[in-house]
Image 1 (spheres, rainbow, N blue to C red):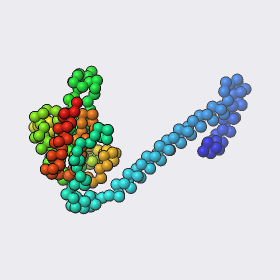
Image 2 (image 1 turned 90 degrees about the vertical axis):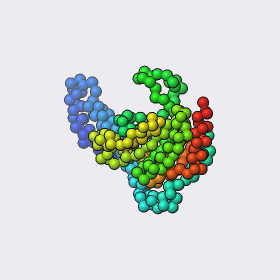
Image 3 (image 1 turned 180 degrees about the vertical axis):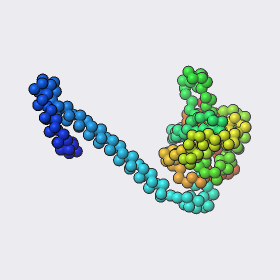
Image 4 (image 1 turned 60 degrees about the horizontal axis):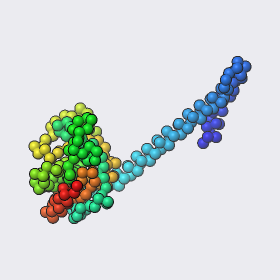
Length: 270
């Protein structure tokens, strides 16, 4: 590749030689040919690096297109009809700390216009204190995060969040987040997004949060291995941002029992 660069620069180098002779006669400090060669090769290295980055971006875009085309809406709805949204069995016991994975970072907005990011993670240095920018946000000992990618799964989320808050709301150390994903570019644009949020419902319960995630969330879904967008995904997250329990679809009585049992363990952990 470097050889090709030198060949491509051949005609320009000959022009530089002509200027170099004049510089030597006038006592020039450095030949033009050397200066030009170094500058051209530096440019070529930069161009090669940018080309490699572009190729990597194209490869990622192609892999994503292949991934998304491998599964469509009709395949999702066919799966939902077969299992009523239960694409997998909910956890029966709490996920041990050593096996728990971190919930991916997710930027959210509330109908009140407040921005937040999940997961809320307790800081050993700042827990219960005040930071330079004001009061540190209260981090719940147990947070139930309910993800809905389509309107059809919002009722599924409520089948988990409402019983969860009924069981632990008085404790004051739990929060429930009902997250709706908005991937429409129009609704995600700044002026339309603000108008959209103003029309959305606001919760009367300070421990129940209806929040929205705007834009593309492909990488987020890949981290959590989310494929079917027509069902609900439920995660119990501890105060360090780790997933300690998970469920799918609408809640059953048995699954609610396992959720409350695992949440009780988290509330006892310190």
